[in-house]
Length: 384
Image 1 (tube, helix red, strand yellow):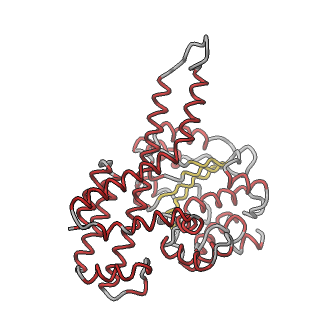
Image 2 (tube, one colour):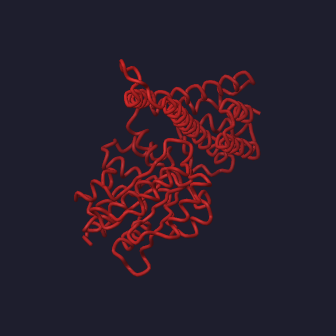
């Protein structure tokens, strides 16, 4: 294996602050005794780089040099174009049994160009119960040259029988310093802005990059952080909830409008809809597509709301830090006056109750409670 790969460069360059994980994966690629297995479970908090680690590992398994990052095998594996690397990331709320069966069929095939057939499931926590049953059988009876790489926030998010048959690789939350160095060194972001983005993103590399690159993203974050101080009446709470839910829905709509239109146009053409003299076929497929698009928009709206909840969490953690004299880790230092004022007129118990309310809202959204109701309940709890 090349010196560059061993040093953590090559395909591993994107894995910020994950030296221990990279060392484990490099040993596995090298084929050390007991280092490699046919099924892996990568876990770590949002933004820690689970998907990047899985893609890098897949590329390294195909690379003649163990992950140089420059050869055709590395480039195609990382981009999803390699014929023996399957990358799965759902835009829906779940991965169903039919999708899993297709992956199992693919996993049973011998590799065509590479050294292994690698299946990467970036959202293994979204596999349904029936899908998990199909996946379990494939992992229990693996093909000779097949490697499964599953990704999830925590091991508990994956069915116990599956995780017990996988080798667990836990990714850490990257330090602020590591993320700052990445943004400043690779992306050319001014150091002060990079440090600010890294601090407020709390180790979420994708979020830090978005904040560093986009004034609009920073503006939206500032608007969210103005909400807690504005929750002065019941009416203000209900209005704030309506604004947050509407903004999340609009964000999801903007993100999906173009792809929705393209998908519908392509399907309509394939079915012969709108073609003179053609007899339409299987118009039920349009309804299926509409259902899938609605599910995708729902997930994106939920993701947007989750970002709001994350910002609220940083806000009230800062309040608690002031109340407990733990001010070395203040995230929103630019709001120190406001945070101090709220800390003085409330108690640590009240702040903890507000943090609990944020968690309860997140759980309600995951349980498919109507966003409007979940967020209204949260805003009232933050005001109380």
